[in-house]
Length: 422
Image 1 (cartoon, rainbow, N blue to C red):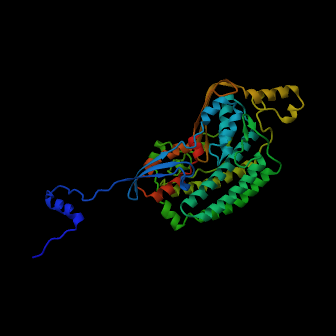
Image 2 (cartoon, one colour):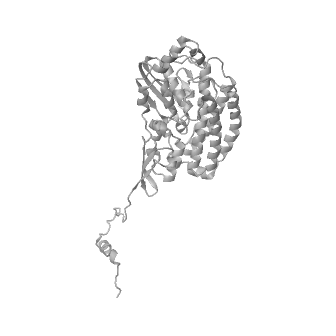
């Protein structure tokens, strides 16, 4: 006669199994094994979070069931700081928002305050700002594209894009005296006019840049590994992109052709011809394609600006109480010396009122809401940062994907935490 034998550790389980009632027909049987979800924190010190972003994730095996962005690690209180300094003193703080495109940040902030003061901006100043903003767009996209390549394993792309970005930084240094934190704009003008021969060097950069850009994009566009990592990954529908307040390339990648340079032109953008690239699926691959084409369109704008660069003044001449007078006049006129002293110490004198202005920055729409009660210091300043809004889509777009897909999604959103946290 055969004897039933069980291991001692399993004896209790075997006895319980024998007592278990037979499943009732028509009802689902209770699963024998249950799984527990795992909580995993990605960041804030992680190379793929592009700064001090923390993702609090919940995993069912390798599949994400929850992904909450935790922001604020880089919060510096910029909006409160603005209430305690003059309008020009806040310009360096705008450098630290999207620190990959400080010239574009400077421009957006200066235009907001100038609209509060109702200044008439001369054509040369507008052309300088458009030129530098588009150069900043190319520089920012180069860095974003290179970092995105590294995220998905394409190291060579980063080496190409970083070299081209270095060429732009040399041009920025010639113009502003700084490579990264330029602080070039002033309320009513810019810090200085263009150096002699600088436009020719910018034009030469554009001529040599376009073939290199085509070569860089060819490394990724039909690369099977890159396509496997990005096509149909992180799909953001047109409705979701609008609902979550996405702007810039992330919104246009989802098929919404919103570009303030076309829809609400400022600084003379209406006189330049360029196209607005849009995606069809709204996946990581579409967002990559949009940024690649945007760099080509920016070069197209830059070459148009150079071709019809206007003469005249590079600051608003009617801004006597707002824009500091030229140094030669400060050193030769007592009235101008006193005017310069008052602007530096008390700040540009603004009328009471409020204004909101938003610009099409590389990361999306950057807005400044300024409230003045008169005088040289803003009473209130609020910054609408595109990276903050773009990151809000993460809890929706990441669910159901793998951890490796999250890395690709973060790279495709191309955010900057300095701008997000402010």
